[in-house]
Amino acid sequence: MLPYQTVFFDLDGTICDSQPGIYACAVYALEKMGCPIPDDATLRRFMGPPLAESFANFCGMTEEEAIRASNFYRERYNPIGWKENRVFPRIRQLLCELKKRGAFVAVATGKPQASAEKILSYFGLTQYLDAVAGPQNGEFHISKQELIRRAMPENAGKCVMVGDTVGDVEGARVCGIDSVGVLYGYGVNEEIMASKPTHIAETTDDLCNILCPGMEKGKGWFVTLEGVDGCGKSTQAAMLKEKLEQFGYTVHRTREPGGCPLAEEVRKMLLAKEDGGMCPETEALLFAAARAQHIHQVILPKVEEGTIVLCDRFVDSSIAYQGDARGLEREWIMEINRVALTKGMPSATLYLRMSAEDAFRRRLAESEPDRIEQMGLQFQQKIEQGYEQLMQEFPQRFVAVDATKQPEEVAREAFEKLFDRMNREGIL
Image (tube, one colour):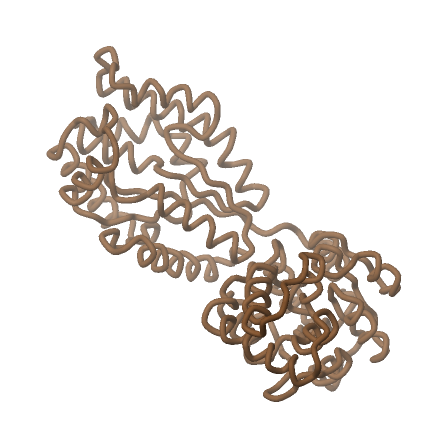
């Protein structure tokens, strides 16, 4: 049974790390006002309280000036700043678990309600919330207790307010409910401790233990990226990792061949230009050996601990490269990769779809080709055909995107498709 039937969360510094966007927008507003830029310690205090209050209390503005500054702040915040948030790790899972166990979950924030709702929707968190309360149009001064009361359900049961500032703790006290002071946010820890909240959470793990005792860590997920040489896998892996981390996931990026010390040594042999006359069978066996070590040493342990693993190439590459392009029997390729096929197959494979011709031109323009890339265009065309066949054979696993678009467009489409699948599979 949950210790609290109704849980109110602050937004900035509790659910989201909004520091980059808030800093940038506050500086923008102060410059427009012709005011000096305060130090980082002062800017940090903008996290949480209503904007007009922050400009008045920390920058010595009159109420009229504070309202003007707030409007300048929103000039930058509305198109750009709100997207610079990052969801704290485990918060998505906590909100989902509270909702699943029957709690009433709400956000009570000093951020304008429309902005808060936009952020929560963008990060896919609205589905776990029953209410959002923030200042409405024209409300520049509103207390935390009033926001809590606005979001309070009729049959609230035992309630708690979770936040990173003294205002959150005091608002809870005025409303006669418990509080959790979180120390991973933006409040001054000494002040939060002195305000004597009911509970203290130094980390999001602590918060999970307080609100959902016994909650296990979320499920991990294994994603591979595939495509012909030059399709942009490395670029997309980096962009996908950044986006997933912004949405609150723990991500480990790796590659094949490689990903662990032993496999990295094998990589050197496989990609060296002077290969000593390596035959296709040896090449395939080396890939399989490096992969087996990678699976046991990195991939399985990371997934087990709840991490999203992004791997640049995996067993599909062996089927396409050593099987379809080198002419080795697929059954034999699959047999030597039995460890991958039985223990470590990915949940999803992001296929960056690009013609061999386009990818080959792009790859040669970027850097000197390695041993395998030196095989030429005809070799790459066979690889492309191999991937196309695999996509037809495993449509449930393959997620195809058009890799000929601009990298940012490819990244957006890739993330949207993968995030949708993660939601459907309960990856939190």
